[in-house]
Image (tube, rainbow, N blue to C red; front, top):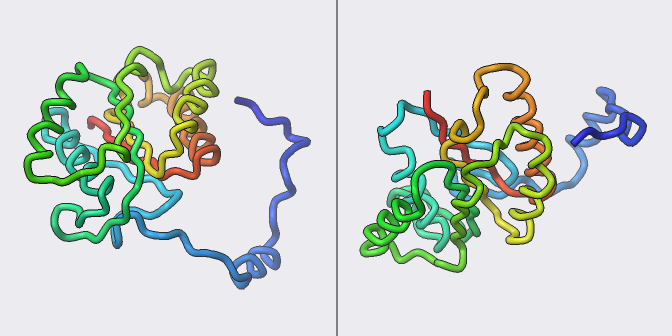
Length: 184
């Protein structure tokens, strides 16, 4: 996913930055007020088995319908593309089945992709087709759970940089917010 240097716009200087700051523009809108904004990146990190997936699935179901997240944070209905990087699809289905008893979510705004489990997100050969696969659904949020599964070596500079470049390009292509679950 290399970009030719000749195609890049020139960097901006301080005067141009001030002009940009002072120009009229739309602010990034909150998806979850006080917590998650459009075109941003949020990471939930903890030891494996603590409950990141359960919390983020609950959060995404609530966001799908524009319900208050965790009963406290006002949200706006948003389409979520959930990349399930580990465990069988049955596990997500069981969790959603249980949660839907109390969360009136919007199934039209929740996409689960468990087919990407065996593809490394730090392999540049995979980036374009994965980005195309996701972009056609026009998500407002892309959740990767967890980022390390099937993407080994993220503690090393080169794979981590490739993965970060993928996230940046994916966000540029889709305009979506990235939510990342990470095992520490």
